[in-house]
Length: 337
Image (tube, rainbow, N blue to C red; front, side, top):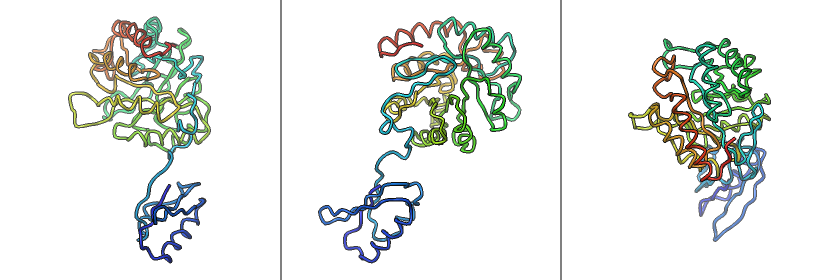
């Protein structure tokens, strides 16, 4: 952090500013460039309220240097993070497909879809057991029973599983879940993130619909700073003025995140659009943009799905998509997992 001192400032006030800053756990160096004094601060800057610094009349400008997210920053950790999720390696030049229904509905449903998407090239099975919904009257998931059915599908197919957690109290149900998903609504549930930082299990963190990329990375920082280094970021669209799609896929976020962080970056074209017909095209765009993987909702009977049928593609459509994904991976230099 660099603070520029206003020209002609009262020396006593500048001295008072320096003394106030040094109350925190920071080091302060003063340099004079072309007659302007600059204060360079290093250390635990999170403890300083820079909105109060601006109240000193001698302060002309404050400039941030470095990333506020220390553990997520590629500058600090230049090598790609590679995550082992139930035997499937994620990141490090690999491309991984996660597929399955929005909600676990029944044993035959989840098992049939699991076999189908695995045959088409998906490496990890998704399925919602605990479902946060906008309407209190909508299907809320089978909860712990849904997790049990996912585990049955895992036993049948050998596929690792990912499911969403909505509350800390549900954590014991996720002992045999390979990846815990934090949904968009919980991206800034900081108490949940801190708890997930204490466990040693991969976390798939989705970006909130109204959150900036820096806020997204700061949420990942909560998990990383707790000691859990296995975080997967997932871009799933943001809310804009456009109403024809469920969200607006921020395709630029994918290559930007790849530059900013060493963490694997996935994309969810299903939630980004809400329209099954355009999910395959968006998925291919995500591959071309450099994503390390995609998460796609697949249902064998979308019209009668308990949730999000409009954005779910059929197993046949997913099979065709995966053939194109593999071809695109060859173009961009990704190795399909």
